[in-house]
Image 1 (cartoon, one colour):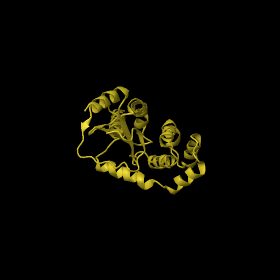
Image 2 (cartoon, helix red, strand yellow; image 1 turned 90 degrees about the vertical axis):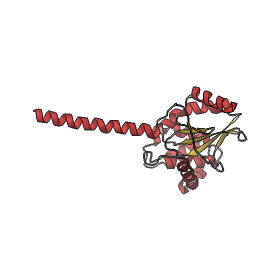
Image 3 (cartoon, helix red, strand yellow; image 1 turned 135 degrees about the vertical axis):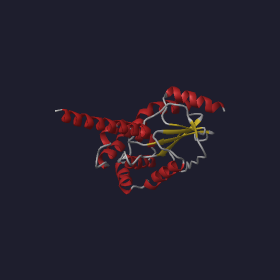
Image 4 (cartoon, helix red, strand yellow; image 1 turned 135 degrees about the horizontal axis):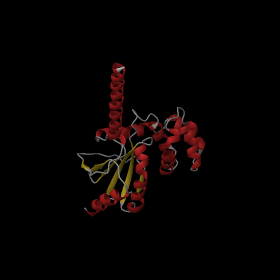
Length: 217
């Protein structure tokens, strides 16, 4: 009886350790942190194909690295929308795709779908659809029908969208963003780069503090 009990305790301990390790790994990969921004090294950004919100001519840029299947990115959306609404006349918000493909198998396809929506002028509306319906599509093996339905819901041409998505028309742009993020040592989503400092998750009060300080410089 004692031997059986000991074996049970050992197995239970191993399971607990694995669970804790997994939780810590997940936190390091994609959960937000509202701590102080880390001063970045030499970062380069190519905004040529980037969806932009706010003042396109603003001197201050916020570079957004996001993954549309990432729960932490979805959780950060209200704070980001708050910042865009309040500071959009003075700040340029630039989107970069950074799908964490090793843990979010549908993220790359979602990024492609959003770029197809961008081709019809409704990138931000489509990303809203993807975040709002994230739990519905993240586990699907076939995405065409769901993604096209989201496109139709915001008034996109279904045939053009479906063809664009099937052809992976913008996949090279998505992967260029990933390559740029890797060069810039981006490791988590969401990541925001503001005035040379890197942040991994922000709420409304964080945005107020950070953007007020950056605009005053």
